[in-house]
Image 1 (tube, rainbow, N blue to C red):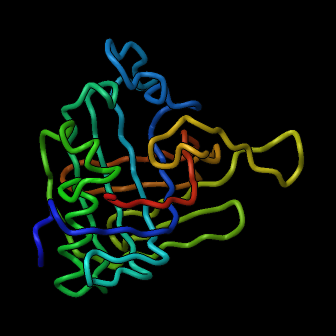
Image 2: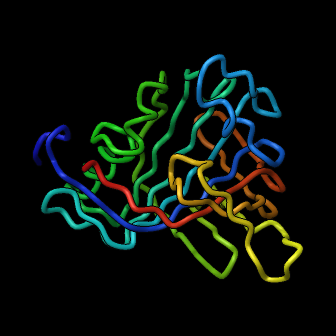
Length: 211
């Protein structure tokens, strides 16, 4: 596979996240020094779930694959010192797995490349079964024995209407839906256990590349 610094990649798909903050996540307001907006629980435990609808890394096709990234930060996310675990879809072959690791670790640039300097500890990379589900205003991801994550849109004063916030998130500046962690939204691995049920969440379509 070509160098991660030169390989062109792009994909369209969807993501959701669920952290341990009460709504709304203060880290969205602390992107620049002095990072005065702290997570509501002091530290941040956040799960990011990704589904690639169509995508490629060089000549490697990534259609239909899933990824999860778990991150812990001791304070505001923008302050750094992240500990991160990466999970890639076990259906990926060797070249696809390498591509997913390059993209979602930030080594291949793009959106995650902006966060790479904040990571101080890589807990590990695992290939596991990952099921990503989209159903109306609900999103979920399951990794058997490790995580069962779920989010749903927060209630709106207008029935059956999602609340979208623009210019608030680097994953999709055009807008993210305000959501909340579903019941039993949990992850357990590397000696850590989270339960972000009823906590802050977002979801959105994404279109990423390193162009």
